[in-house]
Length: 84
Image (cartoon, rainbow, N blue to C red):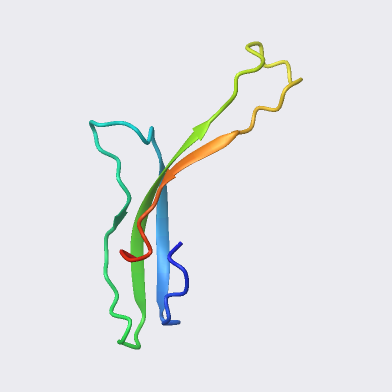
């Protein structure tokens, strides 16, 4: 998610929430809930939240199984590499 963290003691625990990404109220934004000092050589858990929204094409309203029904697009909001 953020590339190489540079410290093998840092682990990332991510919680991916599925919401509409364009909603205004309530606001669903990615966040980083904890901080880890990269110079300290001790275990640290970096807790993050991302937001995803799957987009489906409805080619068959009766769902007969002829058309695939997997997501054709996934919109995401993630924290920047600088924030991580």
